Length: 543
Ligand code: HAS
Ligand code: HEM
Ligand code: CU
Image 1 (tube, rainbow, N blue to C red):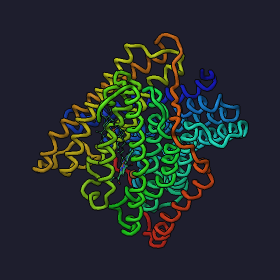
Image 2: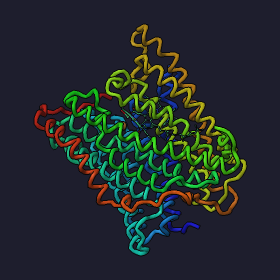
Image 3: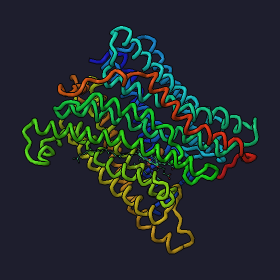
Image 4: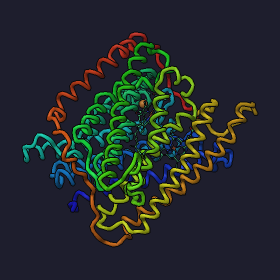
């Protein structure tokens, strides 16, 4: 049973996360309706203002808060109740992040920060928006320090060389996050804040974007890794099986630390000012970071098949039938996994240097990340919520909520099939992302896009209804469900699996190699950017 003090911290994070989900989804619904030509925005709200709120509240806030809540709960489950310093630092982190989130939301609502979630220069927001971002980042560092401290104390006390798999993965995720956020923190503190206050007149756009994507790609794995933690550690227990291999799971997380960061150029393939050879080098590293995902796919298939066969399944695919499809704790993440197959394939297309020219800045890319972060990751987070919320609130998941959860998942899959499917297709026809409704003066090609955007609006509406349903379930599980104990499922490792080599938990080694790869991939390109720097740009407010 989890300690009351720890539940409070996890609950606080998850509460903010679901509030952000509601606000961000409302913006999402309105966006699809605007793009579909169904409505016009009232009361002077701008399309880009809405899109900024959507990106910030969902991609940055909903995810990060949910992840913190989940990791804290899992850390105290596997390493014991939080000690005083980790707990206090965790709360400090929560309040810093929440202050920053509140401030950023206010400035977006005031229409003083309509710069989208990537806040590309030369768009210039109010300095308070950037100050808000610093609070979110530094607050998340406090959480990282707090989790590492808990892990360190556990190691000191137990004198064990290998930590429990869940906590190893949490420490790794936060290590990757910390190294990655150094880049965006540097851009915000040294470039955006002085520039937006007017202390300096100009900003170097290329450097700011490069620092952003140094962070922006590992950001997507920061969302993904906690979902993988559920797939590797939680799912085997739920389906009555065992973790296929502790060593393989750890190795895949090590590879994510090494290859997530030195790959940011795959978001800048069409950016002038970076030489092709460096772009090519980072594309090669991007293909390296696909490997740990393929290892994850392999491992999950192995778990499903061995568990199925142990239950007596026969034939090539008989094991599929004996999986617990009616258990929403399995069903929601499993649908997320299935969606990750086309989602990942889309990513590989994006990363292919030449194909990127076809899809870059089109709705195809928006389709890609609504499958990855907004489906594979989000559905896994919903699947986690169905046991994590009752676990934290000391209640139980009732049959009725189970059923609603299954309906919720199906609605999400259908809504996303329509919305993301239409986005992918119309993107290939050239429809740009980040654009409100327009017929481009009735240009024939643009007219072809309209029916697809109408399908997006239908999908978006179904998704919004699905969000209302998950919010109701979460509310019920937190405050209304019958009292009782709910399990935090943690799988055990297959007895026949190989012994995990201790080197996998050698932090100095992996952080050292990661730093080296980053230096190799970024030093010369940065040098060139500084050497050939243009005079810089003043700020623009186009809204
Ligand atoms: Fe991406 C753009 C390349 C993965 C998110 N991506 C984005 C953006 C976001 C995002 C948000 O190279 C837009 C940013 C913006 O606003 O501009 N992406 C990749 C590649 C991968 C990838 C190579 N992306 C993700 C993940 C995300 C995410 C994960 C969020 C969580 N992405 C790109 C590129 C761009 C990009 C370019 C820039 C595009 C542009 O031009 O702007 C890879 O990591 C994907 C590897 C995944 C796989 C799939 C493995 C499958 C598994 C499931 C197994 C299923 C099972 C179930 C076991 C190879 C693990 C089986 C059961 C049965 C019953 C069958
Ligand atoms: C962008 C709809 C859920 C993350 C968009 C756009 C639409 C949309 C139409 C593209 C607008 C454009 O490029 O002009 C929806 C709907 C949702 C939903 C209807 C469900 C109710 C989510 C979730 C996440 C997410 C759950 C992440 C966890 C994003 C991001 C962008 C985006 C990062 C890009 C913003 C930008 O380009 O600045 N969404 N979305 N969305 N969405 Fe969603
Ligand atoms: Cu990327």
